[in-house]
Length: 376
Image (cartoon, rainbow, N blue to C red; front, top):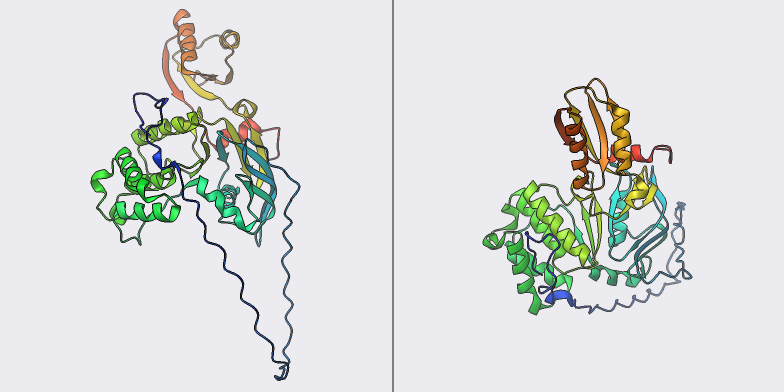
């Protein structure tokens, strides 16, 4: 797979994915040992009985049928803790979706992601990944199609970067004839090939983060789960990662991204799942969420606000808060080209523009977009 920075849509041909074939050989589970025979003649020592609460029996929904194009299903999922609970949550993710899993700290995002990967096994309800129920013993087969990004610092590693990636390829099921080619490609893409013989624990935070991204992409998975993928990366590398996301999306990979700041990927996300205090408060597309690219315009003098609102309304653009003290107004656009209408309006009316800033999209703005629909 060759990524060209000059072509944001990526190459037409995928020449660099010979390592798609994953070794699916699985060791057979060991047979349980027979219980030892009880000696009936042995003396019985009376002890005080302690009552232990028996865990509830997990009910597997055998009648539910996963749709052909659906890769992840949560049905009445609930995870209980000592003092809190996540759920019940239900949602579906289709193949090729770019999903934004959003929520403030403690909302339940990490629990959902860990359940998808199989790290959390005890829960109520049902979860299917690639058609396999996570309650079943054979659900680990789904992990062959999942790539996970998480922030590891490699502080206990003693291997070089290249040897560490070779070990990862081996226990991830990537065949030996594809390992060297895949490792070389991704190390060169992330500009780490010159550092392949260095100990990975001695890398800087930015370099370690790039290694973590390689671990996610190395086996060319169908489902990619990324938790705060832009952390410890500068703007140049974040832009390159976003181009890589565009390539994956064009090739019908399923991406699930959990992030607090989604400004740079808001145009890529086509489906949102918003959590709050362990509950799902929204699931749907961006236009259903009423989430827009907003800008704040500062002017040198007063202007006819109502006339400006009518002008943008004719262009299918929206206006929001007007501040007479600042002489500023907030408006939204569907694309950058529409900003030209704003400039043309004020040039025609002879009103000087002082500044134009893009407003960030964060959880506060998302909660505002959901006000009145849910109790937050």
